[in-house]
Structure formats: structure tokens, C-alpha cells
Length: 323
Ligand code: AHR
Image (cartoon, rainbow, N blue to C red; front, side, top):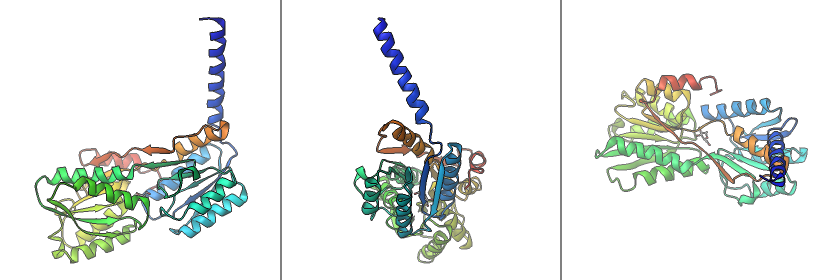
């Protein structure tokens, strides 16, 4: 190797190392986080993991709880822009209506990162989106059901997430894709349970009443575990066995669903990691250090869990995460 090549290699190694060192440093940065609210166990865990990730990195995190209202989120974002924060994280409650405020952030040169939900806005208005492939989540749940019921006729009741939110739209689409071509599996009824346990229970009670006390229902597909837990209670109150008389499949992988799976009262869940902030802070650090543009979509994993996957152990592994 020539001396010039050696020097060039040494120089590029030094640059890479200083980039890496810089890339890890968000100490003292002020970052605004507009959270949706606390509708589910998963949401509570995302909030607590985000705060913990920020603390570990020395970030001054400005937290705003929008109590499920987009208008509160837009107000919070405008407040962050007025304060001149270094960056903004937002978990958008619904998909539409973000263009104006995202343009304002862009004009102020404040990078915005979307966490766990998508928006219908031009991609150049945000730095990156850290989220799961929500269509895939629905597909994984639907594939599990199709395989589990085989040729048996199966009327499914669906508990949708918040109307207009990206997970409600995409998880519905993915599930429908998975059951398409399986004429024996049909969505018999579908309604929003707003991602909450109480609404999930209430809507499931109505589904049971209008389905011969539940005799005509083969499975419930809930867009999140909290609604599934509410549905499980409604099924038990109706004198049926959740997990046996009515199959239960949902999304999130929160500790309570593993308790239900271990008890045979739920059958399957698709994991959504609550750690969206870790990858977000990593790419933000690199971007603020030297302008490194991240991938536009950072996709987290969507793993299926059933009774065969040590539900008691999975409960233990998650219980300290703030769910
Ligand atoms: O956007 C992610 C979804 O929002 C979670 O699956 C649900 O629990 C939460 O409310």
C-alpha cells in the first residue's frame, strides 16, 4: 500500500470516527415531543421509553400530551417552533391535516421526526418516520387466522383503531389482504374501539348482542391489544370462553396480552416496539452533526407471538418498560 493510500485511509478513518463521536452526541439539545395521549398500554410505554432515551442522551425533552386531539398537537408544534427547539418528534393522532404546521417547521429549519404513525403530507416536510409497517402487521394477524381456522367458516368481528389514524387504515388493509381469497373467512362486523380498553369492551358487547350472543362469531381481530383485553372481558361476561369459543388476535404485544395468552384467553399478537425514539435520536444526532440524511422510513419489526412463544417469559421481559 502506498504512503498516499495509507494517509487517505487514515484520514477517512479519522473522519468516520469523529462523525461517529459527533453522531452520538445530543447533549443539551432541546427536543419537543408531541405525544397523542395515553389511550393504550403501548402508548404509555412509548412515552416512558422516549423520556428514558432522552435522559440517557442528555436531551432536554419538552413533552406535550395532546389528549387525543390534533388541534392540541398542532398548537404544541407551533409552541416548539416559537421556542426554537433543535428538533421535534410527533406521533400524529390522525394522518391528514399536517401540511401547514410541517411547512412552518421546515421554514424555521427545525427537523421533524414522525413516531409510530404516518401522515398524508409531502415527504420533504419531515426528516424521517420511525414506525412499523402497519399493513404488514394486519397481514401477519390475518395470515395467522387463515392458517389457524383452515377450511372452517369464520366470521370475524374487527375492532378498529382511531378513525383516520394510519394504523387503523393500514392494519385494516393488511388484514383484508390476508383473508382475500379465503372465502370461508369474512369480516362480519367492523367498528372503531378508538384503541382503548373501555371502548373495545363496549363495542364487543354490541357485536355479541347482534351475533346470537356470540354464537355466530368465530374470531375478534383488534387493531391493538388494549381493545382485545376489553373484548376478552366482554366475551367472558357473555358466558363464553375467549381464546376457545372466540379466537382473539391483536397487535402491540403489551404485557397484559401475554397474561391473557398464558391463560388461554387470547391467541396471538403482533409486536410493536415502544422504542421508536432510540432510532429517531440516532439519526437525528447524525443529521445535526453533519447533515447526514436518514432513510425516509425506518421500519421496526412485526413479529407474531402465540402460546408457543413463552408468554409468561415475554410478560416478564416487558413488565418494567412502562406499559
Ligand atoms: O400508533 C400505534 C398504535 O397507537 C398502537 O398500536 C396503539 O396501542 C396505540 O394507541
